[in-house]
Amino acid sequence: MADTTANMGDRDGDVHGKGARGLAGGGDRFGTHRTLEPKGTLPQPARRVDNDFSLLYEGELLLEVTTLNVDAASFRQMEEEGAALGESVDVAVSRRVRETVSARGKQHNFVTGSGGMLLGRVLQVAPGHPDRTSLKPGDRVASLVSLSLTPLRVDRVLAVRAASAQVDVEGEALLFASGAYARMPVDMPERLALAVLDVAGAAPQVARLVIPGSSVCIFGAGGKSGILCAAEARRTGGPTARIVGVESHAPYASDLRALGLCDVVLELDARDPVGARSAVLSANGGREVDLALSCVNVSDAEMSAIMVTRDRGVAYFFAMSTSFTKAALGAEGVSKDVDLVIGNGFAHGHADYSLAMMRAMPAVRALFETRYG
Image 1: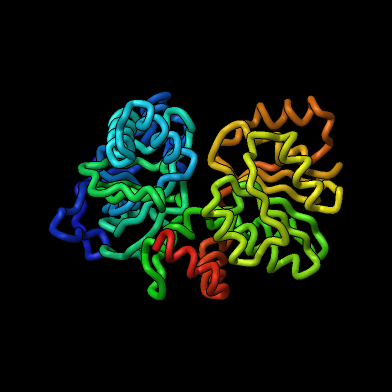
Image 2: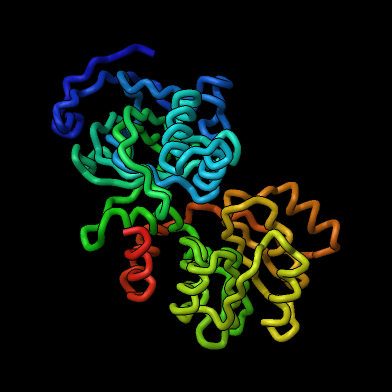
């Protein structure tokens, strides 16, 4: 690949005097040119990626990073690891983020395998990017692809906000030509929008599965994705849908009751599948549900979603803590013929869909603003 130092126009220019980067051809739209170990693999499963941004390849979008929105499972794992060492949340998360990015070139949690997403501003758009004509330096954007595949450099951690699982940083990252992003809306706080965009795939996918009269159980219903799932299930299913929310954290369960989205809110641990089945069936008139949604941020909760779902129903796993092995073999072990679906964080138009949902549901927006905005 021959390096070509660019004569940068405005669209390739810098912000804050950071200086334009040199350009090289040959970039792969899926990012395989940035994988270091193993060579040639896709960047998400790679052990290490190239986060040297002194040179940009075809199709890359360079961002100045201001905030990392760490996924719930990853943040909790780092928090618990630090607690075991006697560290505060700030110290534990800051240390682990810096160690992970230094070792892997991306925020790809060694334990959970998950990452999150980021907020930043455009620094430079390399030739070959599909939005080269519309993006310009300084535009505020949020990534809609996982940090587990996003080349990232963190120069400094400025703040850790445990309530929203957000980490303010100084650093840079890049998105590949295939990497989805969203422009930040002007009618809501950036931290609120970032929290919504982090789980934006949840609501439109729930809308595909819920019909009027459906019975739905949501595990982790008081968290970010859980609330969006409950809100969409109620909106799509209407008053005839039966929605059971399960939340182990008492303050979140209280918030969920106040929203009035669920017919019943149960406070129980999703890691107890037998107890969860008994409680959910009791709350649903003795019947298993049509759809179970797992939005928890802990491991070993797969079987609760499976055991409350009716024959040929759907158990949908949004949680990054989900083990495919435990779900598949567990369902087989209890002879449950249900469809097991791995939640996809991407759906066409999901960013606009979920932001519009915030605008249309003031009570949900108010709660998100209190927690995350």
